[in-house]
Length: 179
Image 1 (cartoon, one colour):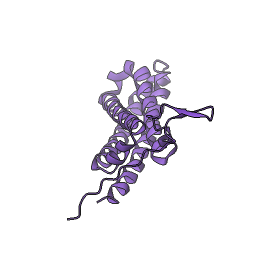
Image 2 (tube, one colour; image 1 turned 90 degrees about the vertical axis):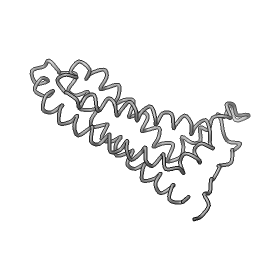
Image 3 (cartoon, helix red, strand yellow; image 1 turned 120 degrees about the vertical axis):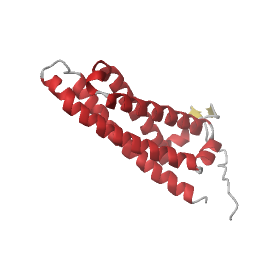
Image 4 (tube, helix red, strand yellow; image 1 turned 135 degrees about the vertical axis):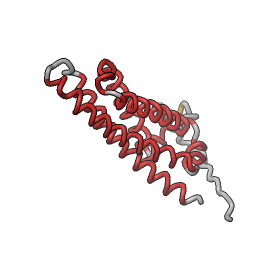
């Protein structure tokens, strides 16, 4: 059995926000993380997850009984994955050490895999319910605004699920390099 290697990224003098090219402020914040591939993926997961969550809350709540349990499952998955990814993003921005420690653990891989599977299955269930039950109401114009909004939510949610799949694959390869 090989020993576990924990890699701690060195803190760079380029942390923080550059002001007028003379000095840097808020050096405890690692904004350069958002320029990396992992940072862009995490930021997209948070932003698109927030959009999906708000679309379903603002437009789908009135038709939650009509849509059925697909509404609750999508809302639950969008909520927990948005909160966890947001917390991870905050940790990665505020602490470069947490990026090295969490990313090389199995947590990141497991979370991204579960989030990807949950998003994709929930979006397919919501898509079925929206097209079966909400579309006829939209044709009669009683759900005219809800139908395109909730449809956009499950389409964006599918994209977020694929993004989580990509992130799971990247975190798995990162994890495998440290085993």
